[in-house]
Image (cartoon, rainbow, N blue to C red; front, side, top):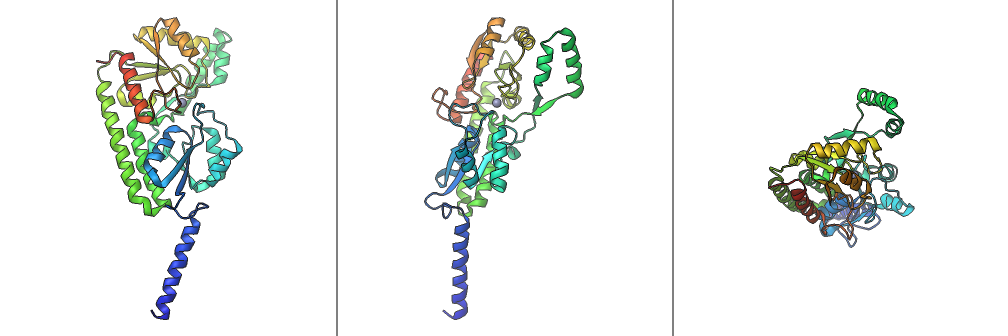
Length: 326
Ligand SMILES: [Zn+2]
């Protein structure tokens, strides 16, 4: 080996050492600890685990059983966001996570919504208008004109309830993980392809199982099922708004009960993570039953399955009965 070659080898070794050093506090990627991913909430955690496989350690900021929308972060959660190799979040879904991702993670934050085609909107529930509406007919009439003028619409974040949109996020995440850990690129791509196969199989089952249902209006606790309804041909009416904290007033509840009867709805859906009282009130007023439809914003011991696929298949069975599908 001449001097020149020896110098080149030494430089290559130094560069490799530097690269490994840059990979983060855990040492080299694919090493003992691998790549660390912090996810905002359950479906993103599940996709990151499936796509990352053994090379990636995934944790979720939303603890099991917590309401995902209004999540508040403890200092150790913010520290986890600051230290992760990648933060997988959904802009516009969890304001506290959006803020931590912006301030602590910078370009290590990855917005799943970019790959999910968030094309749906829903009427924004204007809380001030609700309060005014309850004050009397005159104020109520004025408000309605006002809200029609403004045509308030908010982007619907609940894309994961359409399995094909979740598959697209898996593919895109494989690409992002490959940027962090190029040696794992092929494995991430393969894992995403396997995930896509599972999700397309689920989608085909849902297409087949939800065709020709007698009732095509879904009345749900909060407005989480827009993408599912869009994919499988239902029209969705959320009792609360896009977030469960947007509670309806008595006039809106009466309106929904009337709609339940007009459209031949036989089942009003409650959720695992929010108080069923409001949905039960609507069901009782309209004289119909309730069933649990899971928006998969979190997974608990009470969930009807161990993972996304199992809970979605449970949702399919619930919908087939609740919507009177053949
Ligand atoms: Zn929601």
